[in-house]
Length: 155
Image (cartoon, rainbow, N blue to C red; front, side):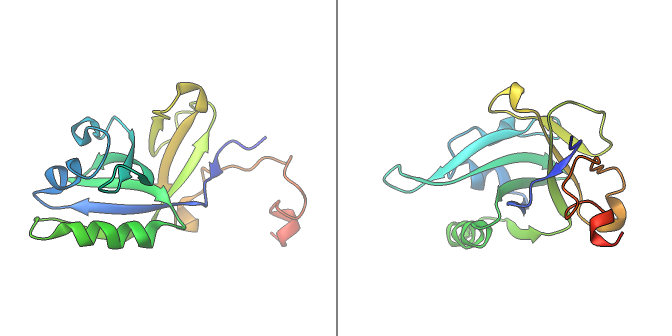
């Protein structure tokens, strides 16, 4: 059984600056003011005709909005947000130091963790430092295939 599974298909964008909430509010389908340090929201970005473009999760941390998005679409989302930036007082950056993990049960993980806002039965989304030395708490149990286990990698 895997205690905490890293969602490698997810990536992080950050929006900081005085206008961060006002800027994003007009671009997404959920109320950005509901995104706090203790509350994760799930939202989408639509085009001008109302068609789906992207989905992501958002929470606030240290005066920044943290966007958890599909890693294959992060560069596209980054460009789209910068296109809409115009004169807004915001800075949009890519953060490769924060990783997204999933856990079915709350294990009092030390980093940021939220109940999945789509459905509580979908478990927890955990945001932790992506640097290898910081991932000591991410345990993979022995039920992994030998090729994926630390022993199978010469570790």
